[in-house]
Amino acid sequence: MKWGLFGGTFDPVHFGHLRAAQELITLLNLDRVIFIPAALPPHKTACVITPFKHRSQMIRLAIEGNDQFYFSDVENLRPGKSYSMDTVQYFLDTHDKSLELYFITGQDAFDVITTWYKWEKLLSLCHFAVMTRPGYENKGLVHILPPDIAARFVYDQQNEIFKDPQGGSVFFRKTTFLDISSSDIRERIHQGQSIRYLVPDNVIGYMEANKLYRAE
Image (cartoon, rainbow, N blue to C red; front, side):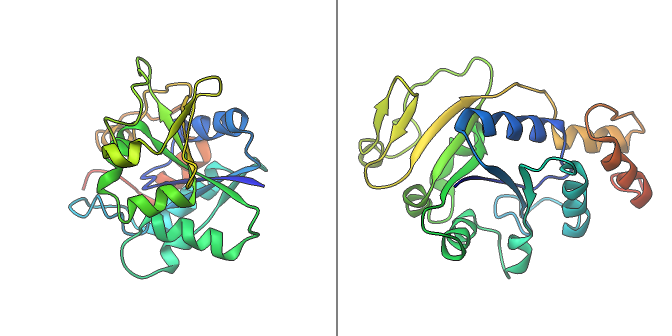
């Protein structure tokens, strides 16, 4: 089994998230993608974040009807900050040893992976599926990781994979670029603008019913 773990704040979830997840299922031959909203994102301590119950319910609504999309509230079940390292370890500890995990993240986030909690161990536990944007040029891992760590990875040019004999691989994959951001959606709602076709209709209905992101 090959599962993708798609973490993030999802404040709110939108079609950019959903389309990328769907394409990665095909590109990496995944059996499922699990959406995992962060309860306390360690890199966003200065931001005001919508309560977990609303962000999680919007994800549940957004993935309805897709039997390859799943939801997990594991990061809300743990106290303290939502570290990716702890989430990956949880899935490895609670599922069959043959399970392969692909941690899904954006290029911008992977570029600063050395700031993540226990990032070096995380690289050894799972694969990384890095979503790239238009104009991305593959320059290898030397500009992202320390030289001694980057040197462990062997590049498989035919399959475009950086393989680490001691751990997971890194897959840089181009997905359809939808210029949608959660912050832009929040701002549009705040200004009373339409967000139709940026977010699933049932999620929009939930936002309206719960008066999310509106101006005070």
